[in-house]
Amino acid sequence: MDLYKWEAKTKSGERKTGEMEAEDTGEVSANLRKKGLIGITVKKVVKKKPLFGEPKVTEMEIVIFTRQLATMVGAGLPLVTCFDLSSRGAENITVREITTRVKKDIESGTSLTEALLKEPKMFDELFVNLVSAGEQSGILEAVLDRLSVYKEKAAMLKAKVKSAMTYPIAVISIAFIITGVLMVFVVPTFAALFKDFGAQLPAPTRIVIAMSEWTQRNWYILVFLIGAAIHSFKYMYKNSPPFHYQADKLSLKLPVFGMILRKSAIARFARTFGTMIAAGTPILESLDNVAKTAGNKVVEEVIAKSKASISQGLSLTEPLSQSDIFPAMVVQMINIGESTGNLEIMLSKIADFYEAEVDRAVDNLTALLEPLILVILGVLIGGLVVAMYMPIFQMGAVVG
Image (tube, rainbow, N blue to C red; front, side, top):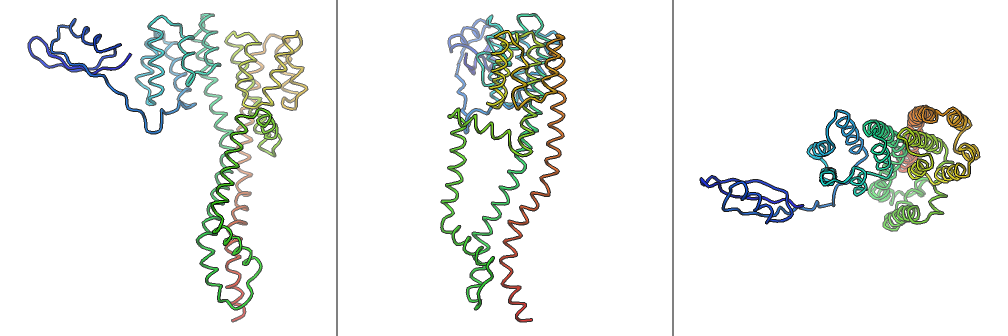
């Protein structure tokens, strides 16, 4: 359905205007004539495409929507009303359009699960499967509440890991940019000053001037190589499964960062698995979704082996214990949960523990990196400054 603007008059000559959603102009005119309006003019509203494409739906927007939906369903509001209110309150135009389409599908008799399946930009497979389980078991309110908690926890965990990775990269990048500016604009000024110095320059100064001259001549090659390296890595990571696997495997072995990634993978596994089981999803189907949301190919492989183990009538924990990802404590807790029928509770405890561990690890990493980054900045920038002032100090000593 499209949006149309209309103008018309009442029989007494009063002018009326408004907007209406309809299949075509004929439907708008027919509806207005039924209201006794005459002199009808209808014009279709042409939606302007955003300059940079449709805005993406962020993790936080999905978290807010899920929490609002759980609250409204818990208050007893019909689903059509829930999505109508969500659409009106959405600031992101993409969220508004998606929720509007879902509302219309539900109004036309489509189930909530089928309506969500049509909108993969906002509702991933895990979201849809949990909603489906809730609809089938008649506990949609409880499932939405669990889903909102899961989305909040997942978003917080992702933000923590992202901040741990972004902080050092951002600072080091800025340091290299400053170094580049010094090499291209500042060092040449000193080099011109030292040209008629009349004595051999100190070795550090000669090295810095030579690097500056090379950078001025070949800066575009350097920029190209860096850009090509980043693009090649992204392309291979996305399109080459073996490369993707090896990169994920290497990331888990990185000093400090590898430990954070491993703990976050365990927390994500436990939180997702526990949420799926709590919603009444069968274990094998749950493991499919857990594997897809693992965020690491190595962890995904371990989960796939666990699924195969259960399919063969064996224990879930055997493949987990054989991997280097899951510690003995985690495997033992899952084993106890399996044996006692409290797997959901055990997984929730594991998720809580490792989410707290990731918080502590990120805080410790930040405290550890601050002095290290200061050292890097001092070596890069301070070294350049010292190298360029050495001839001046040398000249001062001779004069003195």
